[in-house]
Length: 113
Length: 111
Image 1 (cartoon, helix red, strand yellow):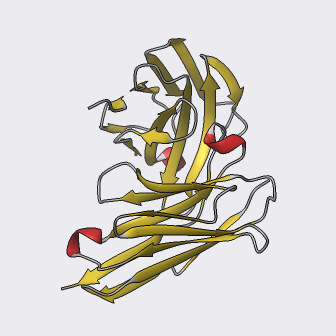
Image 2: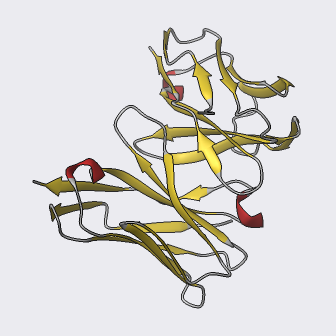
C-alpha cells in the first residue's frame, strides 16, 4: 500500500517569512495530492491540491510543487501570518482523489509574531 | 455553505457500551469516508462507501466496528462493544469527483 512521509514534524517561522513542508510517497500510481490544514478542535480543511499532470499550483500565498520522478511534493506558504499556525497534513490518493487518502504524519506550524 | 455534519461532537462512554456516530454528507456527494485520528496512529481510513455501497472496510476491526449508509443523507459508524483503545476522534468526509471534505469530528472517550 501507499506510504506517505512528511517532514518536518514541527516548524516555527517568524511572521512574514516563508514556510516549506515536504512529503514523499511510495506508490507510483498515486495521482492526487491534497494538503489539509487542521486547527485545534476542528476537522482537516482542504487548502490546496495538485494532480499528477501538473508540476506546480499556486493560490495566493500558498503553492504546491510536485516531482513525480522523485515522488515528492511540497507545500510553500509565503508571507506567513499568525493565522497560518496549525497542523498541516499532506496526503496521496489514486483515482484522482475518489479513493482513500493516505496521510502524512502532520507538521505543526507555529508562526512567531 | 454546504458542509459535512457529524453527531455527537463528543461522547464519553464506559467500556463495553455501544457507540453510534452519525454523519450527514454534503448533498450530492456520492462517496463517504470514515477516518480515525489518534496521536499515535495519525489519520487512518476505517471504511468508505460509494453510492451507498461499501468499497473498503479493511481498516476497521471487523469484530466490533460496523459502518452503514441507510440512505444517501446518513452514514453511521457503530462500535459494539467499545474499548478504551477506541478513544479517538472519528471524522467523516464526503466527496464527489476529486476533493474530500471533512466534518468536525466526534471525539470519543471510552473509560
